[in-house]
Length: 387
Image 1 (cartoon, one colour):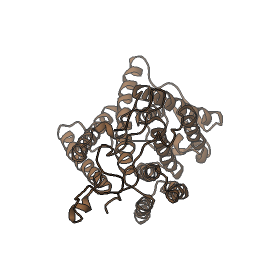
Image 2 (spheres, one colour):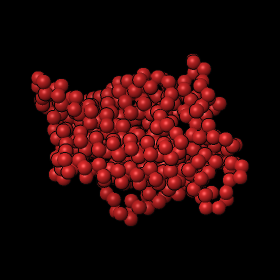
Image 3 (cartoon, helix red, strand yellow):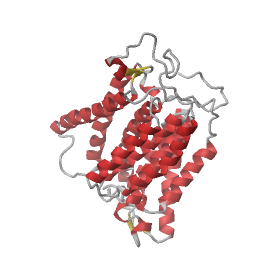
Image 4 (cartoon, helix red, strand yellow):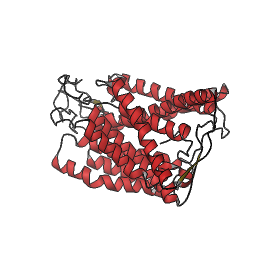
């Protein structure tokens, strides 16, 4: 994983996930009285700006603002075009992306008449969930490294830092990976997951994923695009079943299918990736969606994501999506068959990551009680993406 207003539930119950547009008038599937069936209807639905346009505008704004902030940071010599992996360079590279995401989210919140906390950042016990995610993320990555070491697929070398360097590099890499987690979770599991939940159905999700896979094929995208096709295939039948049943939660799981597949596709641009690493990124993205389902917010996912990357890149010094960072604490190197060691991809490219991620999923489902249908309030798929 390398460089998203309900009535309050009883105090003893876990928080419900926010209902997009729940304060608006009108029943699901019905346009407001007197709504125009002309051009306005194409862009505006019963919950305001239609989901498809929201997603397109958000992605476009984020990309545009990233370009603007990137040029500003480059002009002030905060970043450079050289392949500089120094933590200070990475800090500013992540900072301008976070600023772009924050500005894009604020603009969308104003357009949609929402608070930025509406995008899966509400809920009780945010700090507790975030800290829990930090602990579990570090523990899960440690379990993966321990498994590789016990199988002799990972070798430890000497400690690479000493003295005050340990604290300095630990802090700056901590800040970097917290921003990485905030950017990736903020875009995927916060804004897009929340927004798509309120309007996507199976056919829109299926069509979007099919187009995404076709683009990867036409672009002859290497670096493990097969992992994207696998995660896309695995979500097909479950999402079709919840669609056929007409389940109220169908929008959430269709959105999770799409955002997880997209998350995996985003990682195909990283150097050193293999299909296992891409599949693992998409699978972990799905687990983070499940964490929203069971905790009511994305805070656990943000903490887990940040700690996982920090442990992998700084603490253990392994490759992360093909990237080996300078200023890491421990020194490690892969050994043996790349299917088990992960090779240049690092631990995320090892087959052992699959049972580790399954354990993460099981931990979430056991520790956090799955909400009852009446407690988990999500909007019915009453509006289509742009129709």
